[in-house]
Image (cartoon, rainbow, N blue to C red; front, side):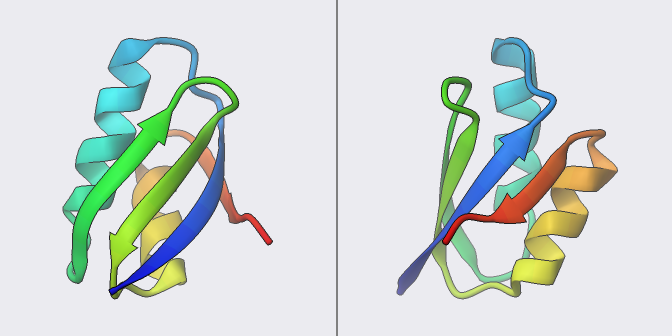
Length: 68
């Protein structure tokens, strides 16, 4: 299992965090997603395509990019 760190922008409340968490955990290969409102990031545990993770977040209406 590996971790992928994402920077998430556009989240403003707990509902946003839950929506992004659910979207990320719905991507095949994701075992768990830890999403935090501040500083707006997610740590995704599992084996998933970064493109699929970013697409899932964008579909919920937020922006995501891989954090180096």
